[in-house]
Amino acid sequence: MPEFVRICGKSDLPSPGEAREIIFENKVLCVANVAGTISVISNVCPHRGGPLGQGMIENGKIVCPWHAWAFDLKTGQAEHTLHTKVPVYEVKIEGDNVLVKL
Ligand code: FES
Image (tube, rainbow, N blue to C red; front, side, top):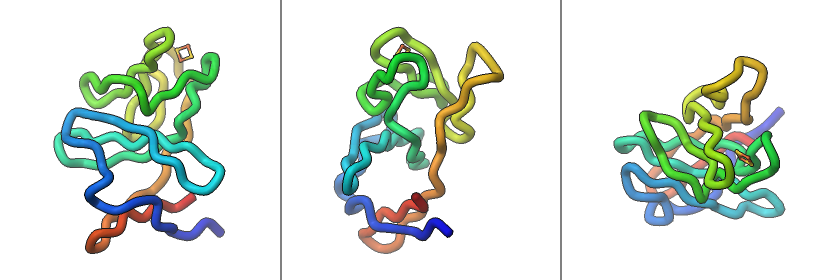
């Protein structure tokens, strides 16, 4: 059973409208802030492995910096096809701790 683990502190989170990569143990995560709502998804774009955490946010979606595939930050669903998704992790903030179920 996955458990919540602390991936970073609240002050490490991206500003509203931005995303960033956060490294936790041997994993790189894409952490995004959509108007104050934090999403944590896999950093690996299913197209060719682009770093989603280096992408831009547009209309609640993260846009891969390599070839512009877009993924919904709540569901991980690709915009252009129902067949592709990125893993989305449950996240909660407790005090200064950002906790994610990995
Ligand atoms: S690697 Fe992300 S769109 Fe191609």
